[in-house]
Length: 418
Image 1 (tube, rainbow, N blue to C red):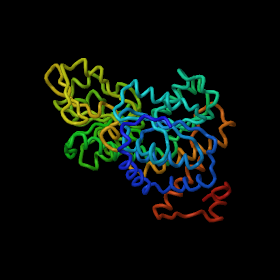
Image 2 (cartoon, rainbow, N blue to C red):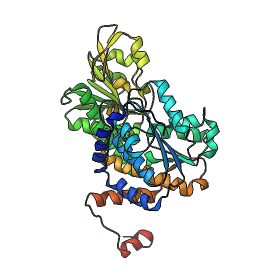
Image 3 (cartoon, rainbow, N blue to C red):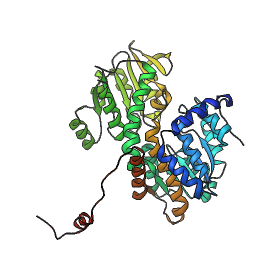
Image 4 (spheres, rainbow, N blue to C red):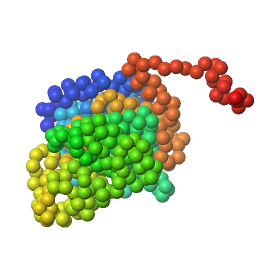
């Protein structure tokens, strides 16, 4: 078995951490039990480009239990947990190509290594595998039944492919499942982003001005958690409806050009590029702390920051201090990459439980229905979404009501009024 990980001697700790995460993933555990019995993925070859974490490991184990051949590579150079990568290879027999801190050349070498298996299904977190299949690895497209996508950023890229009528196979937007973005994006990103910022800086949030760029589901989560820790939260937005929602949620809303002058902490979660640019860095307070929790580090104009700086130094792990030509400093956390994975451990297992149950069941759906689908981006079927929610409620010991026959009739009729 070919693989490329940092150190196989790390596997023992990785296995313990994988088992720790699995204990808080009851929905995925149910899916794994069903997969192990029915083997719905038998004959499938799945190339997965995801953050190599304990939660992802449990998804890989579930897919293998369902009969699939699996290869995993990292979807971000700084998100790999090296002990987990080693354990997947040694203890579970799953090829992994991922090393935390790998350079860009190695990153793409790993992507291509995953595609060398000639997958029938790909799983993406940012659409890098799909992008390669549409550019450098077109010879593999004919064998691809479909793909799944985990992130908002990836879905944006894929919808662009579809809109331009060049998408070569169907894609299930796992990110758009309600049991994914309502929980993973809001509660997972909210908690793990603050965790990463605090691990990197050990600074007090209470009383600070915390600027959140973007008020989608991830931005809502970050703003909610920062407010909960006593920060004065400022939101920047380009969408008037989201900006209005932020105001109604109790946050100040202003352009980034104004927020740059007063912010102590900054975090981008937009899915766009150059959200914080060099003109904004120049306006920041001395010692401002800048981070990103969107998928790609392009949200921060690091090239522009370098151009207006006279030097930089690493002042602590995951903190690079840029000294501007004026003498002020700006600190960039985690090289501008996903701070929740660069400096922390990513989302808690409990929310990834639902996200990865969606991934597993979306792969099952592609095996069953993929040949009947057009080359478009699809949302996860509603019945899968609701089944996952029911399983999660049951795991939490919660029960809900069901409609009576009379209520069903009323909801289906038009005759009854006041």
